[in-house]
Length: 149
Image 1: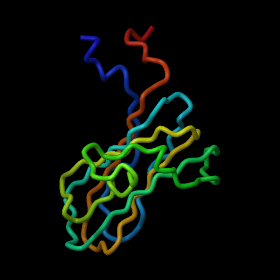
Image 2 (image 1 turned 180 degrees about the vertical axis):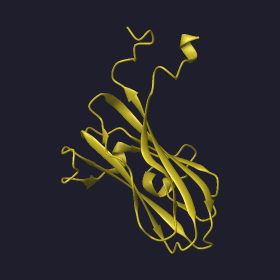
Image 3 (image 1 turned 60 degrees about the horizontal axis):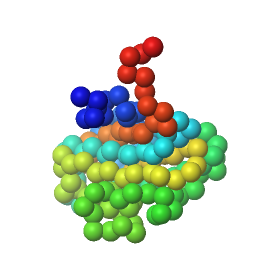
């Protein structure tokens, strides 16, 4: 059913490969090129978060240079918070999490106008294994050709 088809309407890219971090080294995603996208949703997937006092802070950056040498924090107005979050003015805070977020999904959207975007997750007080992966799901400007021709 074409009306329910998300498979051929969305773009999927690796944000950050699944990894186990055991310290406070930041997890920095791939830089996503927004040239052919109308919007982008970052999907943060957690597994076991072993440290009992760790926190994980999310930061989204944007820029016009592919190496992100001009990176700047994205303004709240250019982000969409995790659905059902209590804060619409601090989307990054809503996507951030603590050790208690085992096996969860957090999302944060980008609707800004810059060419390139990346996401960073910075652990604090983490000395146990924290399993985290990030996917980038985009809405292409043009619908993918379903028939491949």
